Amino acid sequence: MPENAKISEKTIERLSIYRRYLSDQQTKGVTNIFSHQLAVGVGTTAAQVRQDLTVLGFTGTPSKGYDINGLNQSLKDFLDTPEGTNVALIGVGNLGRALLAYFSVQRAALKITAAFDVDLRRTNRLIGGVPAYHMKDIGGVIREQGITVAIIAVPEMEAQKVADIAIEAGVKGILNFAPVALRVPGDVFVENMDMTMAMEKVAYYAQQPK
Amino acid sequence: MPENAKISEKTIERLSIYRRYLSDQQTKGVTNIFSHQLAVGVGTTAAQVRQDLTVLGFTGTPSKGYDINGLNQSLKDFLDTPEGTNVALIGVGNLGRALLAYFSVQRAALKITAAFDVDLRRTNRLIGGVPAYHMKDIGGVIREQGITVAIIAVPEMEAQKVADIAIEAGVKGILNFAPVALRVPGDVFVENMDMTMAMEKVAYYAQQPK
DNA sequence: TAGATTGTTAATCGATTAACAATC
DNA sequence: TAGATTGTTAATCGATTAACAATC
Image (tube, rainbow over all chains, first blue to last red; front, top):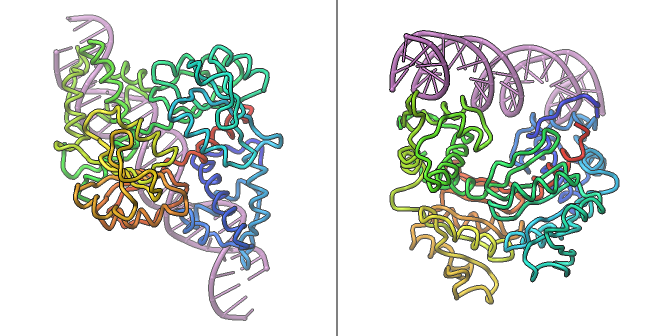
């Protein structure tokens, strides 16, 4: 992968989706796949797939398409860090606990290794197999574990505050479920999962005559 | 709002975000706002805000900017249906119950009025104040209640099947939490909330030197 | 009035789609 | 070989940003 190539967010998103689909195919024993098959599987176009895959430097052949094992390895090399990534979950309410369960079934490359809350009933014990700490210990624990990614699942009012603390402690990427625009330094990446907005968008298009 | 104007998804997303921010300001007693203030509040640009707001046909003034009460009303008229929208939640596992709690605090325009699951322990009773039915009753209940929007929070394997049944019963918009590309007719809108993809994207950018 | 902001149109930017020679 | 698919470049499309006369 060329060091100075600029790869769009959309491309990264699709690479992640390709990987999941290809892993599924791999477990089914499929060994090769053509760009248009992959495209149908994930809901895009063959041209898009081919263009996206060039960023990996992984190459297919006109007769066989892409080797799924090799392509999966390339996607892994590209998307994952060799040593895996520790993730902090901030906020262990209804949503937080659901996320804990959701991400616990993931492969080891991304792993929630610490959870935080202000509620004493949810701290200083294991929740879903993950140690839950009091919010006041965020900075220390993140630093100790070398955590660089955090999931924010706290109420709107608290989100900016916990983001600031997490970033101060070394976090460089945030998956934000709080419905606020976080103010962060330029070297910190924020992805917003705005469920209310998504719901309103769906409702809007559902009511359109089309 | 002009009948034949084509409005991009991105614009709809921002309108939803503007509304939430403006509602917050409204409750704080702020009555007027300039495009650049709104832009900072939601994390976009003033030019973007002004261009987006033109789709409402709601107009500001150079001296006062936008009247927040009036703008909120315009956004409501644009985004909401007069009679409100009933939403079905399909899948009452960890994530489904978290979503039930999350959306129960929303204003009345969007309301989860029915939940569905295959697990008998989660059906034929109220969950979070919402009647939970067995999956086999989906079609009937959706039809009876005139539901047009569904949230899919079932395992990957079941997602396409429940989507097909919901659409057959009249659903026109789906908020899909299952990590699969749903195949739907052209008049059905699907918004994917792919949490694994989002997490991988965050991890990718967190590890970039930048 | 002078200055700032508006609505709106034009210019720029970036992403998607199409095209095509090279390859198996 | 003939046919289909590949990598890659060019054309198209759409969204964002900039510009500016009109307005308060």
